[in-house]
Image (cartoon, rainbow, N blue to C red; front, side, top):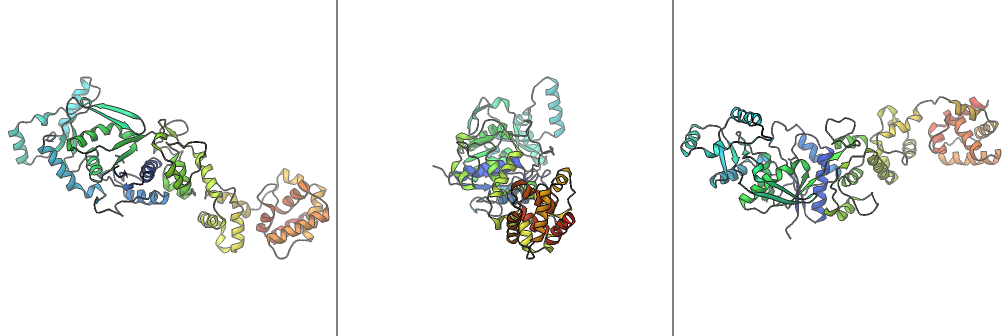
Length: 479
Ligand code: GLU
């Protein structure tokens, strides 16, 4: 069997978006599942639309997600390099000339005004879609020669074969067919000498020995154009597959303009989503495993991936599910990893750098089970940085006689050496001394010492509130 080589070929016209990242992930999974190569190629021929930093964003965030290319501009295999299309222009010119010589392509001298005029005429005549009128295909040899000598600007057009049917077995959708009569002669090299996407992609996929072309569904209608080129060159056609759309919760296509959903991988990183969770979540956007299991490691996903289970229906981008998944991954971190991760997200306004490490670690570990994404930590820990206001519920607890008993006993046994362990010991003494248990004991202490009726683990909360604050609250209440 031919070596499996799958490419992800972004145009650096923006930053790594959830849709692109998903395509890259599936390209990667196919390649790795079959023990093949995952190739990153930069399709930067649309020079007006390229954005500064677009390529860097793609590369950086793919690595971050763990979708690491085996070959890329930064890590080229000399056999296939270069990996940026704008560095391959000579190659495209050579192949375009070959097609011209063989009569498959021709120089088109029509100006954009002429073309526009003709398209308007076709529209006015009621044609559903407009196409090139093939004027330059039929140009007289003498005229062609004259134009060439004059150095008239030209584009290169492919002459679409007549009466041909292009059928491919799409990895997602099964058999898809196009008729050549529905496709007009199309431009393969623009008048500025830069190839069009549909032309460059075929040359590259062939020369880079790509076995599977797997991409978004917007490229389905490009596939026959690419197939005709493969055929004209006599090259083997790769396996094609087109993923279904990603839609939002209302079933609408995820659009880059939709601000209700974060759509760039950088945003998820900044909010404190783990790359492993994103990887896992995106793998289920368009593919489903056998059975009910949803949490998969990187290697499990590579092993489990199967073309048969690619989804034919659009995949819903369910943020709640992503957050749930991230939460599961965060909970599974060991304490040291959690602390290392979460410290990056704590707002400087809390001044944790000026606190003792043991205090900081106790604070952050307190929320390891609860925190769903990194930035959420700021909301969670904020209770330790404001003086809570007593509500009706708390006032009620303070009115209980048992609360008086618990608070005064605890005040008596308040440890000098302020540790969670010593606080637990003091608590046990209070329990014996007062003979209380359950709600009167726990709630009484919680409200009298923390002024809140809800919160994380009580002993840690007391420890974090600090000796002086706890003492003062109890004294004010008891005395
Ligand atoms: N550069 C194209 C894009 O970003 C790649 C399409 C393809 O994979 O063939 O949409």
